[in-house]
Amino acid sequence: MASEPIARMSTQLARLPGVGPKSAQRMAYHILQMPLDQARELASAIWDGRKSARLCSTCGDLTAADPCPICANPKRSRGLICVVRDPRDVSAIERMHSYEGLYHVLHGALSPMDGIGPGDIRIRELMERLTGEVEEVILATNPDVEGEATASYIARLIKPMGIKATRIARGLPVGSDLEYADEMTLSRAFEGRLEI
Ligand code: ZN
Image 1 (tube, rainbow, N blue to C red):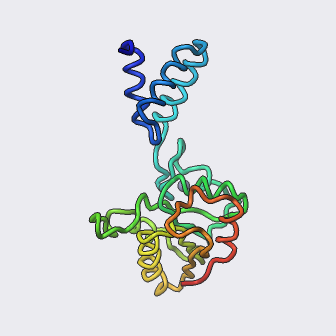
Image 2 (cartoon, rainbow, N blue to C red):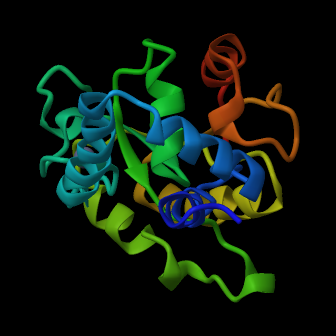
Image 3 (cartoon, rainbow, N blue to C red):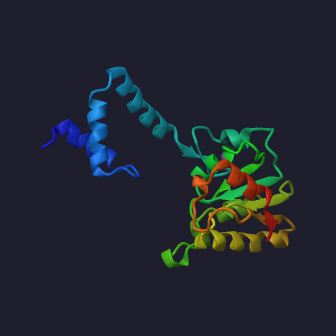
C-alpha cells in the first residue's frame, strides 16, 4: 500500500491527460524526493498559472492579461484573423514564427452527432469582430469531419460580407490535430491556403 501523500499526489496527477496510474505514482515518488524549493516552484507554477488564467475577451485565447499579448500587439495585422478550435492551436501556429495576423479561438467544433451547434462555439463572437478592417479569415480548424464542417459553415456566413474566407491547404494528415503538426508542414499549409 502506498503511503497517504503518495496516494493523494498520484490521484491528482492521474487526472492529467496521458498520465496513467503507474506514471502518476512514479511522478509522485519523484516529487517527494525533490529539493524543497523545486517542489515549491512546481506547485506555485501550477497554482499561479491557473489562478491568473482567463480567456481574452477579444480572441478567446488563454491568457493572463486581457486583451492577450497578441491582440494587444500593434504590429499584428488587423486585417487577418485565423480561426482555430483550441488555445493549443494558437501555440502551434505561433511556433511557425511567420503568421502576423490575429486569432479567433472557437473553443470547439461543430458536431451534430454530439449536439454541438453554432451557438455552442464562439461563432457569434467571431461575426462581431468582422468589421471593415478585416480582409481575410483563415479557417485553420483541424482537418477532420468536425473541423471541415465548421470551416464551411463559417465560410458561408462570411462570404456575403465581402470578406475573403480561406482554408489552410491539405498536406496536414486527414484526421490529425493541428497542434501536433510540425512547423514545416503547418507553414506549407498556411502558404498554400485556398479561398473557399
Ligand atoms: Zn486575444
